[in-house]
Image (cartoon, rainbow, N blue to C red; front, top):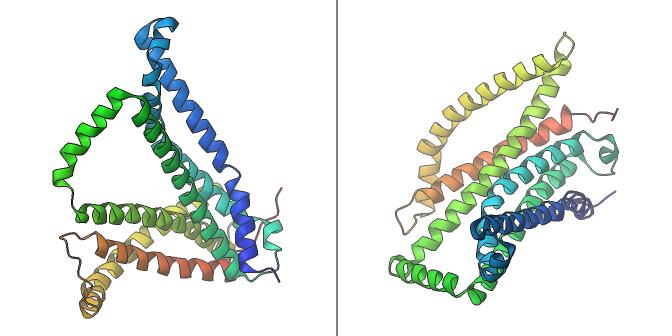
Length: 278
């Protein structure tokens, strides 16, 4: 039997192959846009050389702007990769239970996505540090911004940023679970339909399933939040010290993820079979 740790590592290595390709394209693209922008601004290559110190701050700004798009693109790539592995007969032949297979695949996809975000933050931090110490104008701008920000800075600001970033990651994981749920549930339903499967039927099933999920989650969440979660949090004395609903929202999203995660495991184990690659 293959261990969970071993399979998780193989999944991570397989999915991380494209991480550095995405990152290199992003870095080179941001640099190209920065050089092109400075060349247009100066008009001549000789004048551009006199403004070479401005390249790093422009490179930083370009990289941060591209990060938004590349993180979205990478999320789409990793979601597609995740579903392809779920359908792969080669991977499903691994000597491990279906539950552990699905959990290893899903978690490795999410960890790979977080790893890509971490690399983006690291590159941005390096560019920021180098720009700060090499460009005097950029350093002065940063110092003025820090002075303006410092009087309004408090520990709760860090908590808010942390809670907000955690909420974004939890929502990304929820979206990936919904994609898997649509894939598993539509496949399970199609197996029991008397008509031949085709693209139109699958799309209609997806729309129907999304509507049903939205309705059920609306009903369940109202009951959960109003009746159960409030009583449980009060019993545990889980009260944030600052006036913010984000911690409660994060708890709700975590519970939603766990419910959908368990449903996906059951669907994957009992109703979803791998397809032979044609």
